Length: 598
Image 1 (cartoon, rainbow, N blue to C red):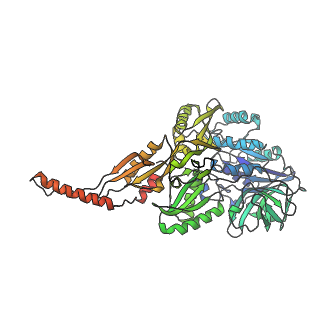
Image 2: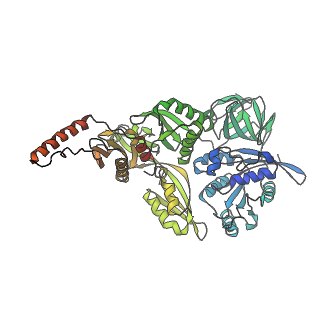
Image 3: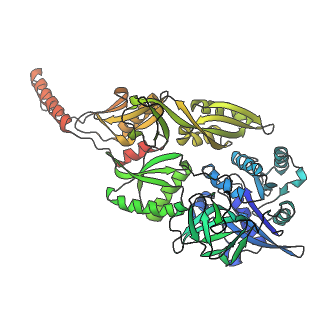
């Protein structure tokens, strides 16, 4: 075990984490010239295009140093706030972390968040200033920022450029010298931490694990402690660029397990593997079920494609166990699915993957969070509400609680005022203000998650001219004044446009949706009233005016009573038409109203 090093890379989005991983693979000759490509560990087209890691990966490298061979296990982590639980499990599988900071952008919110996770697990931190070759780089300033943040000497910070390869040798030497080898007892009962799983269409679910204590033998029966299910270890091995089978894995090793598991939901990230014959007394701490934070309805544009959408979601779920879905129907949109996502980025990725990989065009309803409602009849009974249309009569609720988050925003001092103003608009309360340097500040807010779901991130980037970074963690539920906002067309409520909103924002949101629909619904032969309702009370109204034929055009003079008679006849016809007329909302109007900028 003394020649094994297990480490991860901590960085904010676009600070060069995937490029640094590429250089480490090249420098240790773990990848041949023929196999080389940019962002080698990011194997999804979406990851390469967006420059973010969506699915974490692990890879083993071998490095010769001072006449000894060292095994370096890089456990990659996703780079977005939506996937913070996966990051925490990857960190738990390591003894050290490379803290990568962009020399032009300095420390950002996601860097801080993941750094605190690593420090809480007592990991050895190796600070690295990346992109020192950029013309806008300020390495000396950033080194001072890092030294102040983690309390190290400025000489401990390694200057590197993952693009040109500068400093990579120094990073590899630092990994061997500074990161301690794994501590574990190969003779103890087996305890292995599951930090990831991927679906192989030919062999089932491939489980990625780190052995903390004990040994795994090929062919033995293994128990998944959180689910209580047992499987046989058909194949175990190490994770090089291509999996390499082994007969034995022991304390300190990182590898994969194939045991014929058919459904990704049976493998939970953070679970503990142990042997059925000699089980461990307790599981590794820190496991929790990943719960969806944001809910939205997905409906096929073509109603006949419902079964195709179900099959597409089932296939996606094989690769993404955190995606949840169940059937639902809407009077306006037909049959579809209520889906649960980890956050807005996760929703975007699922939507884009459905379009690219399965050629499915879908309509996404207004995203919302889950609420907890307490009934007047039984105040102790708690009901979880994922869909606003499930709330038939809001008056039956004693109170409603919504999820709150602890939001951390790092920005330049010039933008403190506009950032605080935006957050107060979003019903937030400022809790802390810390100056990281003379011109950079961290602001901490308590904020309702429902306010972040819409346009918060875009508006934050806009008011701070791109100089603010954002990170959050859940805090639990708080009671709040929520009302159900319904949109009625021609007197009929449209269930797909219902939303649970704060009392304070109900009028503004209702007015905006009514105005948008008025401009998008084509005119009919009769007036169409568009109303925003809270219960039976109309809070906003717009009218799509009727198309009118000029019936008096043939009257070229004569008595006014002739014109009046023709207009009265037209009025009766319009009234009859309004009674039997039905308004259909065009697809384009739905898509426009359901967009979060709405």
